[in-house]
Length: 621
Image (cartoon, rainbow, N blue to C red; front, side):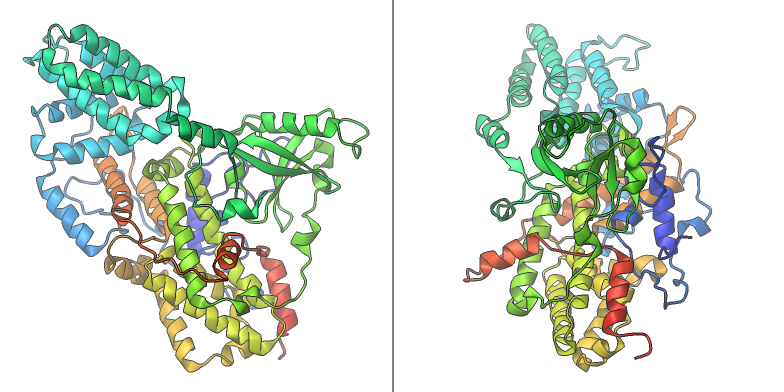
């Protein structure tokens, strides 16, 4: 097991490596692109305690590796999402009482069963649950294009014997198909709009078929008008939205940001959004490119070559460039030319380099990622309340941007996902950033009294985030204080007043991963929406469910598993069922604090953090 990786991290790395694309950090990079692309969850977010050179082996935590995973849960088995609160689980139990599990069947037959349920022929007592389950999970077992074809075929079918719907009235069939189609379009609206003409083909074909049937089925007139509206929505999004996105270049966290842009409310990223990004060369000079977020690596390299062509620093043009991600610790990952949307997968202080294959081994991190300078923290001049408020507001903006389907895409599809989990990857990046921010601020402070003040302030900020039900920043702050480079500072912790030490011990118990994070789940059960959950643990639960039972048995889909996946996704929907109400507190320092919180400067190299810690308080002190 690599140094610093505990069983939970090992589990997540093992589970997600199989689901993610080339480019995972931590493996030795080669010019062949053999390393995997998308970093595993354990690499994106450092979970709980990392081991340090001074600490012993990490304590054992819950690990599904030690359990024998069942292949098929029985219909009566209780495998409810551990992410749900007790009230939500009791609600789920009441729904399950009326919910009839669909038997394992082929994807096409499950789609027919759904249509029968909507039409009231079967499973009428649980139509809404079944419809929502199918909408949220069908990309796992039935490609969206295939699902659209099934709906089009069933709309045109006359329901003769042997076609699956004996004795059906034609109007019932068509109304059921349209009802399911509208639910599909509504669920995936934002994602379909992004695809343009590709996604507009389905509602257009369905609309044309429905128009031809109007003379026979005049009751379809309202649905035909709705279909016409849907074709307009998907074909041409609101002009003002289109124009604003065309003019705007979106900022990412650390790869090229502007102060004015970071102060704007966060909006969901789409693959067509344009961003600025710096791409470095081996001598640490760089070119700034403007690129679509979903751009392929081959297109990025073409933009880089074009920029280098006009650069005075490059007398000769490179013949064959590769794109490499280099972390602050020097680890490298080579991207394939076909890889897409690589920007959101970069770590906190990871930068893109373009070089020839022969130059790969010579790549080193930027000087500012290796060296550090001591200094006083800006936090000393900011109130804990204002910092906490800005953390909560920003986390809520990020969490609200994540489409619920992104959770399913991240765990079940990886690089094959039709819709990239861009916004989910950014919130994972933010979680890691906040953890390292805590350690960076404390370890850069040379004065012992000021370090103690920072400890007090961070504990107070964590308490305020917990009070405002932002569990993402709350746990990230606690885990940052629990970083071994910080926790080893004996003199600093001894100077902390007893009240704060006791409060932090309570926070540590919430972050305790024992008994499958029971303390955290109990806290979650006591909260009501709106709230911001610790997103990495939601993904861990989904990953465990995915790996603990099969999706297919031959050609048959385990729809019981799909129901459990949908329940987990619905928990996310419940957390966002009402808007977070934050009272603005205009103050002279308001904008300064907001900009600071949204542009945290951090050190994410654990070896460097530990070196800084040892200089502050040597081991023999």
